[in-house]
Structures are given as structure tokens and as C-alpha cells.
Amino acid sequence: MTTLERASHLARQAVAALDAALAALPPDLAGGAEATTMAEHFARAAQLAEAGAALYARRAAATEAYRAVGHPDAGTWLARVSGTPLGRAREVLSTAQALSDLPDVERAYRSGKLSGPMAKVIVAAGHCDPTSAPELVEAARDGSFSQVAAEARRVITRSRSEEDQRAREARARARRFCRVSSPEGGGVRIDVFLTSAQGARALALLEREAAAVFDEVRSAGREHEPHERYRADALVRLLCGSARATASDGSDLGRSGPGTHVVVRVEAAALRRGCTEGDETCEISGVGPVSVATARALLGDALFNVVIADGVDVRCVTGTRRTIPTALRVALFERDRTCVVPGCSVSHHLEIDHWRTGYALHGPTNLANLARLCGPHHSMKTNTGWRLDGGPGRWRWTRAGPGSSAFRPERDGPRSRPPPARRRE
Ligand SMILES: [Zn+2]
Image 1: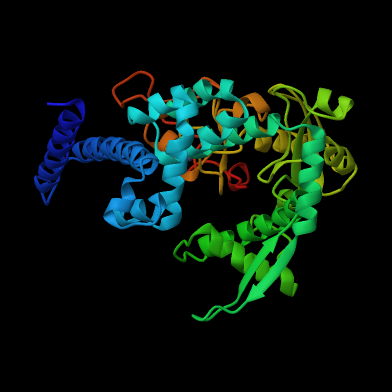
Image 2: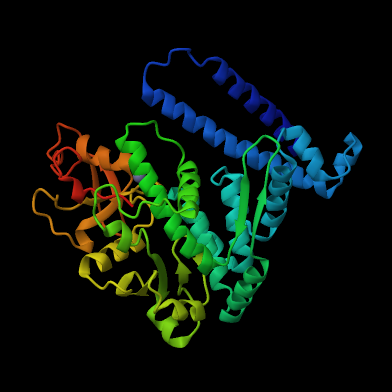
């Protein structure tokens, strides 16, 4: 038996085994634990299967074997056999082809440790800076897709010079548009492309208004909808001039905090020098990298809070309102861009938790004692004995059972905390 014949035999056996495992799925699976384990087995099998299909398809593409089965190019052939859209099939193929230059990434992909989309973002970063590939593969082990994609974007940005960045901004400026069309199915479609600075300004207002829409839906007890629909309602309100300026809890933090203001993060050294070097960043939160020249120009802008950082430390927050709570909030929003629970990448409707010492236990309201959590994780921590430990950059999420001495139901939760302490983005 040749190696290829043996591989083919094993693949057929594996497909038959998965088929049998799925056929044996009991209609009334009692324990949730078994269901999560089974879903994990199948998710891993799916990653392996996708890698197998991509790597063999790469070989078939190189030898033009698809012609023998009547297809003009490898993409249409793969789309046909895998039942995926053409664009997706081409993406899978081009990722598999690009992998041959990055052995670490190919090894991880081959062993089912990377999903296709994860491999794609790592390959893009690896081509700008091959030394980043092993670290990104490592980050993909525990990190969520959005965390790895953000890190890959930073690698790509770092490989660009200040001149490249300015040239990109000029190209974006030349491309800007707002297209309006009426789809056949009804409704109005608006597609907008803006420069990073324009987009950041518009998004800040849009997100504040969307949060106000969400507040109203919640207090009216209506069923929740996806965030993009609240954004659509918010856009109409803003354009039609019926925007609510105040948050539903009546505080003005929604207006002056980072929910309204755009946060630009720039390293102190880069700001002085006029360009970034090495690991330094210069980016608008939620929008992406900008040139240091743009960051400098935004320093005096009322809408922008420029966070001047030194590594992970926030050195200075500039803005028109320099009160300590606003600076603290900006720094916290900047540090915890997503829920801090490892692997969770929720970035909307986050809640502020006094994670180390609870608010009701007179825990201090300072950067070290605050963390942003999504609603479900906040509720698990408050009510079901899950614990947050470690601190920024090394968060741990562990469960202490009710029998354990580590289980201390907190009084820092939604039930006992006064409303102003439980703020959302
Ligand atoms: Zn979360």
C-alpha cells in the first residue's frame, strides 16, 4: 500500500466514524457536559477536515487535476465539491498556497489547531513579518479569533512606515463615498466609506445613540435585537435630528465619556519622534491605525481623547474635560476594549466591575480595581461563584464551587448595587 493509499483509507474510515458518532446522537441528551464535549470533538474534526481539504486541494490545483473533472479553475472546482461560495473556496485555496512559505503556521493548521479564518489572518501578518508567525500561532491557542486578528493587524501596521501610513490615509480620502440605493426587496441601503478620522468621529456619535436605543428597548422590556439594528435606528435619529442627548440613567457620562469621545492611543515616544518604531502603536480605538501626524492634529480636538501611553501604562489622557473620573473611564475603556474574561471578545454593552474588592465593600474606584465584563460574565461572577483573578494582561477565570472556601457570593452585583455603579458603554 502506498502512503497516499493508506491516507485515503484512513480518511474514509474517519468519515465513517464521524458519521456513526452523529447517527448515535441520542434525541434527548440529558447532561449538558456531554453535549459540550461532543460539540468540541466535532469542532476539532471540522478544523482537521477543513485543513485536509485545503491542503489536498492545493496539490490538486498545482497539478491542474480539476481539468480532468470538467472545471476551468481550481476555485470553481473546490466550491463545487465543498458546497461553499466561490469567494470562500478561493480564500481557502490561496491561504493553503501561502502557507507553504510559513512552516510553523502550516504545521499548526495541519494538526487542526487553527481554523481556516485564523490561518488566513496569521498568513497575512506572517508575510509582512515572518518572525511574528510562531507568536500568533501561540496566541491562537487560547485567544479568540478577534484577538488574534487584532494582533495580526498590529503586526501588519508595524511593518509600515509613517510615509506608508500617510499615503494610505490619502488613498482613503480619495476613495470616500456615500452611496444610496433601493434594493429590489424594499428598503434603502446606504454604503459609506470614510477616512479613519471621519469614521471615528461619526462612529462615536452613532454608538452613543445606539446605546440610548438599547437602553430604551431594555427598559420597555422589549425583545433584544442584534446591535446592528440599533445602529440603524440610531443613524436615522441622528440624521433626522431627534437624537436623545442624555443616557437613560440621567448621568452626563454618556456625553462626556469615551462613549461619545473618540480614543486615540499613541505611544509617548512615537508622538515626540513623529513616527512609530518597533512595537509602538498609533491607532484610533475601534477604527484602526492612523499616522502620528493625524494623532498630533487631533490633540486639541474636543471630540478626541488622546491617550498617551508608555507600553501598557497610560501616562496621560488629553481632552477638553480633564476631570479624574473621565480620565479614569477613558483609561479603563482603552485598557479593556473587550470583556476581560480570557477568550471572550464581546465589545458591546460592557459593564464596569469592581473586580478585586466589591463596590458595596468600599472597594476603591481606581484603575487597578476596575475591569470591564460582558453582562453574562458579570452575572456569572456575581451570582454563581466564578472568579476573576490575575489582573490586566494576565486575567484568569476560574470556578470556585459552593463548597469551597473561595466561594464568596459578592454583594457587588446587579441585585444590591445602586444603578449608577453599573454603567454600560
Ligand atoms: Zn464576557
